[in-house]
Length: 340
Image 1 (spheres, rainbow, N blue to C red):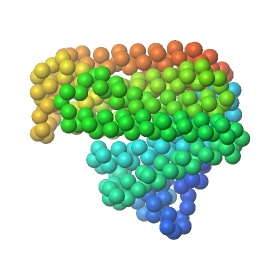
Image 2 (cartoon, rainbow, N blue to C red):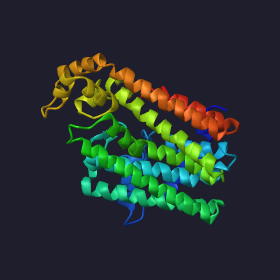
Image 3 (cartoon, rainbow, N blue to C red):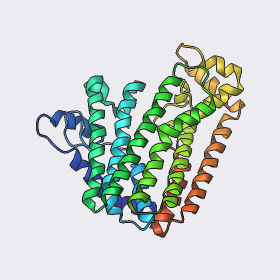
Image 4 (tube, rainbow, N blue to C red):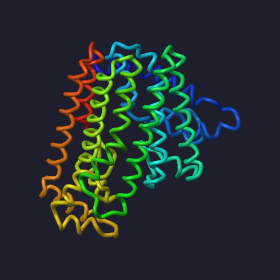
């Protein structure tokens, strides 16, 4: 079976699980849950049914694949996979507010429609619903001790994720951010949830601790490589594919991996991006030229490839089995070579 076959198997019950958690139309929750359903791509601004872009569901897919690859019953992990996706979306709602992003997945963000206070409430509600989703693993035959262990892992991950976001926000007002700082930040903001997803699947499958650690390492390195690839696309991605302007991360003065590497190796680039004024298209193009002069794209791609290799080594060590195990290798490859 290919990864597409597993996606076709997993996604319908995953979506049904999430839909059931965010379903009520009864007061006083109708408006709040309507906001959540809008963010998740199920309704429009007037809460009318709509099939909008809802994300790739990568993290829940990782959870379910690792569960099955460890000889577990993937159906038992559906509530946990839903919890992971809801936690991810909770972070996106709050990130959009903190980063002042006005669009996500081609639609207006929650805070631009309903205001910041209500968007914060919506994010908080989604975090709580994620906790309730995870508790439902107990209704699928998972023993209480494992449910508690899953909750511990889940909440430790949320702390790591928000700590990463704390660092990322702090970077905006700092001119001394280093590549090492960046790596610490993405270890929390991006890699922690991917690591959690893979370890969660193994945990729910009853895998021994060494295998759980290996699969956590697999997810962690996949997460790092994923973010580094995203950073490359943020400068050199094709706008027709990414949906973002060319050099979008430069225009935002985002301290991504290639930009930080370039700043460390070019005083001219450091001066260009260190000011407060708005960057023109010509400024952005010049910055791209300076980045190419410092081989920053090659550096970022090489580091992403290094973490991709480490992910595969961890997966080898985990000795996963069956078609689900092979699909984990396929998924890692697809994420490493993605164009959007």
